[in-house]
Amino acid sequence: MSVTDRPDVDKEALRRKYLEERDKRLRPDGNDQYLRLTGELAHYLDDPYTPRTEREPRTDHVTVAFVGGGFAGLVTGARLKEAGVDDVRIIDKGGDFGGTWYWNRYPGAQCDTASYVYMPLLEETGHMPTEKYAHGPEILEHCRRIGKQYGLYDHALFHTEVQDLRWDESRSHWIVRTDRGDDFTAQFVAMGIGPLHVPKLPGIPGIESFGGHSFHTSRWDYGYTGGDPSGAPMDRLAGKRVAIIGTGATAVQCVPHLARACEELYVFQRTPSSVDVRDNRPTDPGWFAEIAEPGWQRRWLANFTANQSGAMPDEDLVMDGWTDIASRVRSRIMALPAEERSLERMLVAFEDADFEKMSEIRARVDAVVADPETAQRLKAWYRQLCKRPCFHDEYLQAFNLPGTHLVDTDGKGVQRLTETGVVAGGREYAVDCVIYASGFEVGTAWTRRAGFDLTGRDGVRLSERWAEGMRTLHGIHTHGFPNAFLVQLGQGANLVANIPHDLTESGRTIAAVIGHALAHGHREVEVSEQAENAWVELLGSGTGRILGAPGCTPGYYNNEGHESGQATGFRVGYPQGAVAYFAYLDRWRESGAFEGLEFRE
Ligand code: NDP
Image (spheres, rainbow, N blue to C red):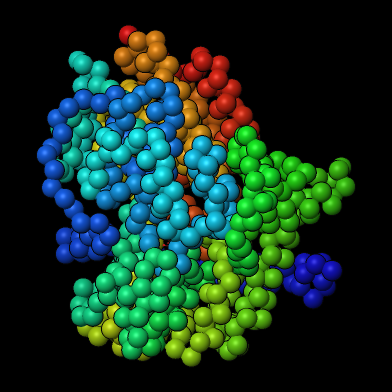
């Protein structure tokens, strides 16, 4: 009998408990509770991985400039190269391609969605992921592989931050200015800056007074810890007392490594993550050879998306933690007699599947963690998709090691830092090092996270145009900004469980539009205001959000519990779901009409 059918499971009590736990965490300052890494804190952003080299500023012209060298830039660059555009210039603040995988080299970094759908262009590059969930170094190497195969290194500018993008109406091109003195022009610009790339620190009083060592997880200091991103033991932490602040997806992956290396590890928790089974395994080359028939990755992507978005296909090719969530909901809905499948009943089935899953996850904590009090505090009391689900087979186990201590703050967070340690619950924990696993800016304005504004037609800035929220067609085109394209998650498929799928489809679309403009000698392409309005209206007509539902514990999925805000645009997707969106986008692109766009000579 499933947990939610048992007479002793009180669903009303669970709902109450979820709300009580959420209320403990609600705070009026929302996103303002976090610190930006500017001024005296700017050193937290220094690149520990690649030395910066001097170079001459660029003052030339390229056909396409792309801001961001992560998956978005790589897949768009690859498709543009295939479309015959040779001079694609990718600009990145990091020292190489990779984006999030360039920066996040903390020990244990690993993808949480199966590699076969997470890693882009596997078929094109002929790469077989070595594991079901590949580790960071392999994914970073794959980014380099794409860069090399498509010749994207030729024009790339690394350790370079765009400061200004300005449309030159008289010459129908963009002027690109950077912090390296570059001042060049591009007929087209595209931007894939990443959803989570601006590290943030918790706004804890006294943070600047801590006298020991400290760093953010996205700038891992192997010089201090020893070890390397492949998981070599961090030998320099022997004898050290280390605090890690935060227990999100990053901490879940690196805590086991820290626990093995430190003398004492203090894990400061505000909200526990839900940590489900990982069950990683090496890829069997024989099996891979069988599945890797022409077109396999697109088929797998489509199957994953269908499983995620309620399209309910008969088979689940991917079978990872995400499709498990979806298949449970599906089987409950399918168990309802056809005539009873009303929206209301389906939502009840969804909630039941969630109660069941979360009860299993909490039971797993009891089964794994030896100390009952620690186990109790590691349990997540919210619906699974309220916060980013985690999957790991060593995180909970780490709390059984004698040197690992959970410091649960009961939703309140760390109180303050002193010169020598971290204070929580009125007690000071003396430490040598503080590691901030405190995440990245999400709910703030796109231009703030980008670090630059666009000045489009008639001198209008993107920040002004989007003052009331993002407005786009397909999340890609925005009126008033000719020849400019965005690669980001909002206002398209809204498929958050496999972001690379979104990025790949956007890259394909941008390459098709630019290819069309170039082939027909069009100097400009711009979405009409009417088409943009119609799209925004269409998105507003659906529920469009699968994450951060009302009643959820605060986090970046729900703009830290504050309903309104720029984050709203992030959550809204195509009303009919991701499968329908990708099918629609295929048709839109392949018709060659590019309805809603205006091409000009
Ligand atoms: P998160 O934003 O998910 O986590 C930040 C953590 O810091 C939370 O536990 C938060 O608590 C805690 N925190 C913030 N302020 C305080 C405070 N004052 N005192 C104590 N704790 C505090 O960041 P992550 O870097 O873990 O992950 C960000 C995202 O990156 C993930 O959600 C995921 O989307 C992605 N990611 C993906 C991975 C993958 O695919 N393999 C791996 C890692 C990350 P609270 O929850 O209460 O706010």
